[in-house]
Length: 383
Image (cartoon, rainbow, N blue to C red; front, side, top):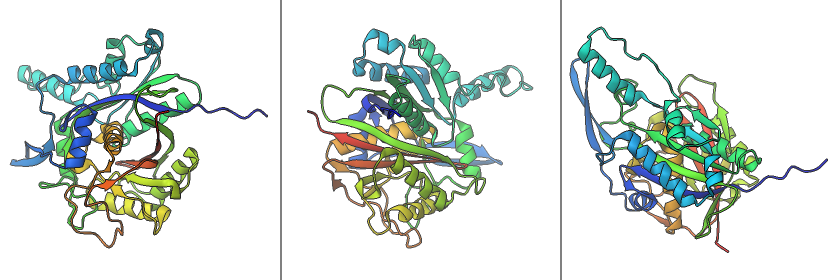
């Protein structure tokens, strides 16, 4: 039997727009400097005005314009031929989809008719459909919505298709826009903090949401300039042990499957970007899952959510780009706001930036409701 040849999968180009600013350098600098500050959002809840911190993009551009600009920049920087660009596969990961647009449409409808139906045409794929048309693409188009692992799964499935030769290139998008449903939803579940995001800290009490749009082009060939990042492999697994609370054993299983798919061992990992939401249950489960795999040889660990916000379904692309861009500057960024270790977790993230000189890293993304995804990446030096 002839062995199946698997092609390498490279992060060929990327762009991002978040509360940290525009571009990969801005994302990396925010992670390294840890100096971004959230804005405040307010809404009514049972007659009370609730204020929550929120990482909002400081720009007047409409959501659709941001999405198109970031996608076009990633495509332009990839330098693909016109033919390869047209047949590129499009993968969009988002948890809110077009909810912000639905909310605006509903507000206008209620202003004209107090009895208006809330959502006339719900469509979670509307973002991918619109972008596919705007970019004039002929390749396949996919929408993935698995809560906070949406864009990570988009990266994983796109990488598998490139690796198996089903695609030469893939454009992977993570997008999350400000909307009341997400804000009020997490507040109602007692998962939103009114102060700071403190992943793995003993005082952690919830997440701080944020918005972003991020794009990366995966390709069978690396960029011609600079260090090249490869996606070696990964895994996705559905945790059905509980409707909402994550199980440490299932997180450990996800990580073990990712390492196996990538063809590496736990000892080969020299940095981890944790999911690190800052909630009681998720940080505990992730910490225990990591301990099951790495035991007493835990690699340097960080969470970037305290400076970028928890961008929900988009975090898989945004955080992968921000983390690798930080590593390219020679630093594993510290976890902002972490001060007090939690003995129950038994995992201590970096409280100061640490030097990084290349190697293999693990990126965790775990979705609310039990969809877990882990990615293994490796940086190659330019020849």
